[in-house]
Length: 606
Image (tube, rainbow, N blue to C red):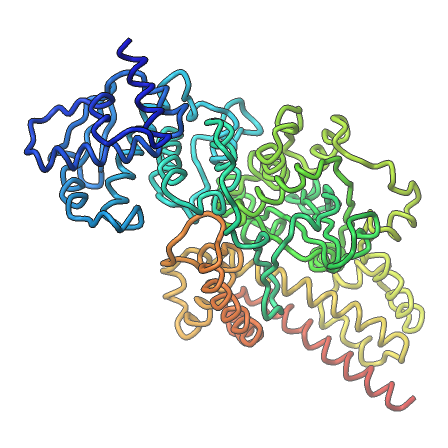
């Protein structure tokens, strides 16, 4: 009878039909405390209980012993054990000092309520109706991700950026308690962590949290060395389809299985969603997990030990096409996935969460691009989580997607030309380079068998042919030397990051070059980890309007700095490259200048 009455009283308090003193029925105050403190305690307990959803209140079906403590460790505001709650007594003094009209935004009010709700969440989590910390779906959303190679989940939570409280990552139990306190106290929780808010709404059977005040769209920050403003605001409603984007393998050890990405087929503004959106290439966005030194030219040992950060990059499709087809000479295959509108929106939302919150570790076998892409699909879409899709190989993941019926390839032409024409395949530039080389070889009598052999020659060995090229061969050789320069620049950037990233002592020892090197690394790190721009700015999860205003200014300032300084910075830090590599890079740059001047002179005289 008593338990039924307690649950009924709790439900009445939720509905606003009870009074603060009714909490004496739900709590037993263990201490003999002065009347003023007792009244304040009852007020706090009553306010906290009124905030609980009815199903949560009903689950607390026995009296809870409550006490104030003076001996809790520093930084610990409360403890919940065996249907008892103890809070730090200092919270009571702050609670009693607050004005009744300040509401939950008052720091003292919020601190006491947050501590109480946090401990009530622990008690609820232990009930049969609770169990959120053991809920597989919540663990997916929270960041305790399923392992791809071994059974079970990863012990470490790498969603460490933009967190309301780092303590949440210590365990699933603490994650639930921290997030439930914010779910109940923060009016914008559904804007900042929409998937978790929806999960809590469904779990408690409450009305979906309002998103009317949320900032529009999903914000991503690209990594384009030449862009003055790399911010991209994505409207999920404009995504027509999502493709699995696979970069072909090449001979390098780290890319022999290809590279996994997802392509968001975004419609141009004003265009209705439909197949024509596949032609709006300039609006398409690529989600690519990369080790933060590039995804192929990395140290095998550090890739095996997880020493590289693994982060989600959101890149314009054109930049990805250029990187793979023109620099790395790898084709790109784009295979549509059979997803519903709701699933497309959920996937885009999860990608935004990863972009702002996730800072993982790259492992060549167990947490590479294929594993990260699979985890994104798994954690965003429960339907796909139930399918046997995990693979450590990018081409293996595509095969499993096909076997499970997740791809939608009926509309893809069977002929290669048709696939290229409609954007289902992007050819490597090697064929184009070979055609350019054939022009130069026939005109100049070059001895190298093909374009690959020609570009493998030392730059100084190629220079004599550049000086005697005619108009057609000069134009062809300019294309080839420009390609060689892009490749050497990419190798140089990766070499610098690999040698200097995260090693402050080495940077300090770099002498006169230390300052530009530090700036080079800072800019590169910021554009790979956008949450770093919001350090010191209140907020968590997806950035909202006030944060976006600060963010926009900082991003544009760094982007402008990078555009202005990239050549000077890279020229300065080139001095830190190994002598042989620096010589090849500089000589290749000289070749580009040489053939460019030769071509202009020939064109002027024709």
